[in-house]
Length: 293
Length: 293
Image 1 (cartoon, each protein chain N blue to C red):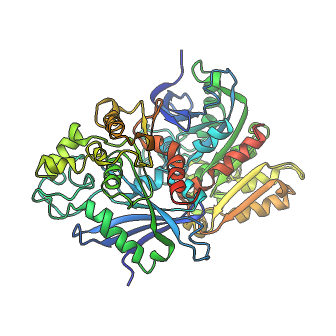
Image 2: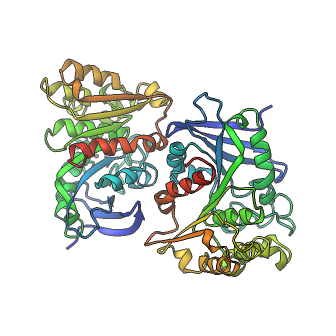
Image 3: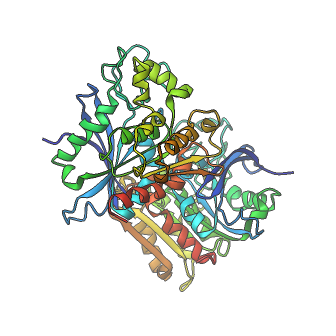
């Protein structure tokens, strides 16, 4: 039986965007997910295409980046699929889950929560790294199009944090990583302190979900295969929510900064206008490591 | 004194998107407008860039296409500015103005209304063809970037109707025209019948705002310089709201169909996903006639 319910199928840049949902055992909810299949997947050749997972930022659903990020433009050109998961479970009705935009619904931070009641359902790390790919690549409808051995990851803001941390924690799982305006040292910024404080019991757990801490565990000479873009006009950057400098410093100290391309984009903000302007570059970054360029 | 109030300036594809408003004597209201200046305009060379006016569809404001249409991608590459006007006056508080999504606010249909009370303020034809360009190209802040002698026009749905009719009524005013899913024969579709019935007193007036009627007045051999894309999965097309066949037939009978490129895009719908997939083509169409390609 197919695992996904198709809510809409939309033509986009020669391929198809599928708006789907599926029951998740990690979260105990139905999870929304969008998947873009490029024309190369749908050509009838039977050739499977590599996959780029895009993790969204605070308050976002799979819809925002599908409409405004323009990853489909590059994905169509290079021949990779894009998977847009949701940012949290929805509809659990836990106390406090909807009280703020930067915690709870729409703000799962890609961790497995250990603090009650969020430890029920807020299992976004397991969902993104295990359940979703296991389900998707075995799915009878979509699995035949997707090469589950060739997967890269990217994301924006909270999703950039998710992409960096899930990549750094799982060497070999993803072919490359990139991020737009990632929360790069969540233990030391207000967003991260609030979220980690609410989801995770101990400071030791915090460190396991902090890119700046995780990169310290990489070995000198390891290739990070990492592209990060940050806009210099990004108010969240200016407010110290992103702290890419801390990450860069830790990468340098670990001796792995040769594999890090960190670009400061003059005047760009935190929005989808910023991402759309550089999403082709991020698709190309993934495409190189996925054997498409 | 500058004519426009700047609400936001956003970096996009190497250029800048300006979210503006200005007092309009045509409508008697403040009109919102977005303008994209490509990097070529901002290079400091003093070279003015050609302009593509984009007319939005029903319910839309300047925001929708700025975020989701992807025109900035092509405009940045080719070096043209994009002007995104609003779709009607807002805030006049006329009776019935907000009762439906396809008439009144957000649905000005690019005509000068002759029926009261809409004849007060619903002067979108005058606004788009006269007041806006006169104001913009003379403006001390923006005029210096824009070549008011090189202007093309495009639009979506109701805005496609606007682009086609304003182009056909004003030979020589625009260098070329294109449209996505335009309402091509409004006198014969429900949207057009409702809007024209509400805004215009006589059937003679209807004909002056109907692309299929207007093209009959063109002379055999005139070059239409027109590109139209319609999605075959577009529900409004299927429901007979667009009627591009009627327009094509009239263009053929007038002997001007050599200058018409009408493409049916397999499976595409009426959405911004459709437009984003082909906006590069429409920018290139304009760029050719504006001397950029």
